[in-house]
Image (tube, rainbow, N blue to C red):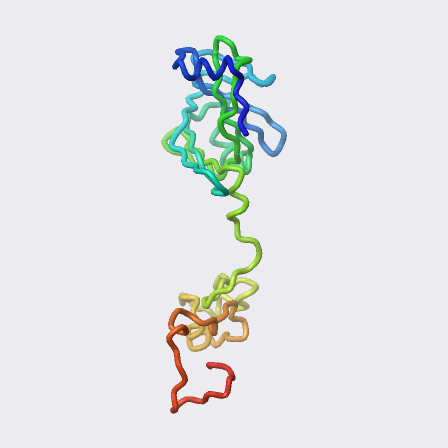
Length: 217
């Protein structure tokens, strides 16, 4: 539950002109950075939040329950803050970010609006756009394999087992029929082609078929 100091809540409700946003970013390598959309630097939780960094809040989404929620932020690339070289090197991958609302006249009056992780960051004409995932995003990640009719291997990788010479420039649509008929590689098929589909719900025994409970193949 978000705790909002009574004095801060009163200022928010009054629409005070002294309110601004601040972001605190913590990278996996231990580097900590602060940014604000105010016109001068502010100190928040012993972190100096730089003004003039160009950071602005973008679209956000979220709702009650266990949905992940998301937020976007954008800003300029400069040598003192986020550089293009550091983005390319992956230094911001998985960084933790907190968005705050505070009173620049009283920086001690602050409330954390949102916290999450940097999912991806991309460059765009000398600027950056960061997509942020909420704390529930981890619940949406697929862990392990999922059951499906199509193959989940990458053509030519270790699980597929085919060499570049065997593939010969051909493409694979991940279907069992293609794996067997085109590549003769059914032994390495990484899917489950016999999983019943929607048509199974309406299927019924027929006199011309073998009805012994064995494989449908």
